[in-house]
Image (cartoon, rainbow, N blue to C red; front, side):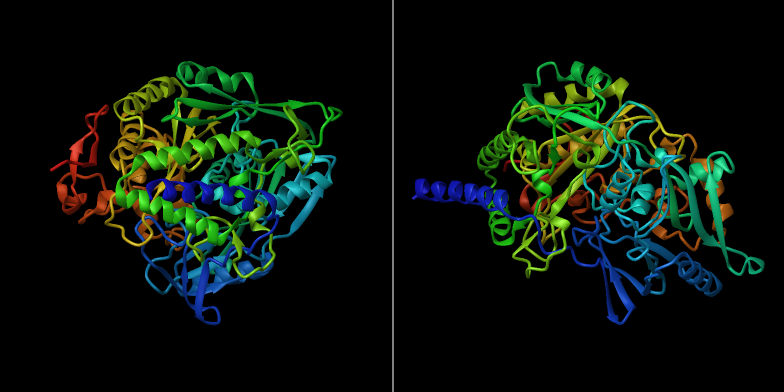
Length: 587
């Protein structure tokens, strides 16, 4: 019977592979993150996963969908006159923290869903001006029509221009100005609250040369300065890239991580620590006359068959319930082997992969996300994390470690794996640890120095926040080690609450940002209790209660913050002894 059970599980895995590989260029599009009881009033808002870190329900009195800057100005003026709180929500609402939430039930949500037009093109100056609701995919396509390219960008193209600037989204590079999208912006039109004499609203045109202080605050703003209406990008002539993935053991990874980004312009890594392997992305710019018509279509961003995704999720839930890490690790090895075998979805001609290098133009090689393609099919297929299906439900912990400390951090993670090799298989079930290069930015809330950003994605219980995770103490120790021992900067759009505890003290220009915020929005109409907490203005972002450490709402200081009834107690870290983590203790 155990042999038969194992056979069916292996068969299910390969059925998932076959189903997902062949077919689905389109899927049911994601739902609107805003839901209202009556028209556009009495609303709730969520993110693309359907849950915030504290699982709270965020409410608002109404949502507005301006279609022009004039309509946006009218909305902000009316709310300012009434003294109502406002927050901006994007088309897909991908930020995991509560950046879209207003306080209480009386605030207003301003959606940029229909602010999605090209405003102006200037091929000679190599600039493109778009509204803030334009998605990265649309930005890439519009630039390509001009034979221009954005040099660096995130790998997921469902982000909007305003969303990328709100959270400091980036790709991977140490070259040029670095990999952050906002560092290629030259002008911003910002709609903010105004005085009575301004008609309760003010439209500001910001640039690095005319008003550098306001500009450097607005390029990574967390949505606290108003609503970005339009953005002008400085682009580059279209170019091609040559991409090769190479898998190696991680024995010298600490040294390689320091130099690899200097050798290859678009370098990144997928680290598989439990397997002792690293996938190196050898990715460089090549002339436009180089032969090749490659396409980067990252396999995990393609649409998936909902019933198969549900079955795979059930397997993971079963492993968590039984405490069987061996099955997790076996599946993780199969998944990573499969993904590497299909070059993670890269093709040489848009259809099949024939071998390395894969050469293609920048607009076809930089980002992907075909599961967003809008073709209603009743959720037969969907993005695998769509909350309307039983699919992926995860935590994300994402932080940047200064390059000067990366080798030591990698060594510490390896030391944890040596203690228990199965402990990090949960990360490898979610493609491993993605590592991208970032550089310092003039943005006041941007990156402070050259660094490697580590992106950890791992299992989260969908039904019960008090359910502990298998080997969760290892993930918690990595998280605390990064944030506390190595002073890592958290990604503004991807973390649990504890990552933002005291975070504002890590930014040398935080006071300048706060000065601009006070000047542009003196009544704090775009601020909330949560944003005040992360800015260190009032209260603390951690939530101390029973089981709070299980979902990253707090760092445990007593057993009740874990799950003592299930054998998880608060204990010191194994490598970083100052950490306090929820550890499964044998009776």
